[in-house]
Image (cartoon, rainbow, N blue to C red; front, side, top):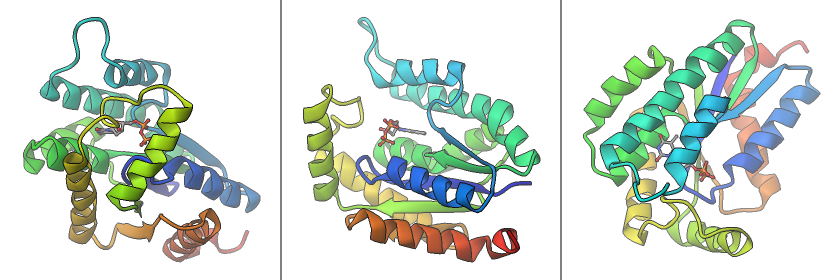
Length: 216
Ligand code: TYD
């Protein structure tokens, strides 16, 4: 099985940049890499992403329906894309995965974590990442980056418009998840120069997968 690495963190924490940089590092070492994201990553999952991110017509999903749409997207992505790639020995890098549900729908929206964990195990067939990189950024810095992003594009998605209190809960939620599973998580402080963050990401990966990276 190839290594399965997920990137987590609040909006504006730099996940997509650091996934791209890590993929480049691994490819430069001759490793086959699949980069994917949640929600999304297949045509059906991208359609679900569209449903989730923008309030369609006059109806937006209720919080429960929203949670189940994230799980539906994950179930599809795991079975059609992630597991087959891992079986071929490919390194899979995923932008958000189950911890986003535990942080956003659990800590953010207030659904009980044990219920979310049970549905997640059903949706994924209990596929757990080998390593989860939590890009941590404080709520104020995250806000600043988002404001810049929103000025450049549209008005932001449903979660980007949530309150500061929501974003504080979210960040504490991610940190709490990391504390509960220290063997799987590495916390990387992300409010710094891109090169320093990328160095820490690489060092976490190189340490965790020293054997797989050896000899090539
Ligand atoms: P995205 O544009 O990918 O956000 P970001 O660039 O910050 O990663 O949008 C994904 C949104 O969906 C983001 O606000 C987080 C949210 N989300 C959940 O609420 N639950 C989940 O399980 C997942 C995967 C994402």
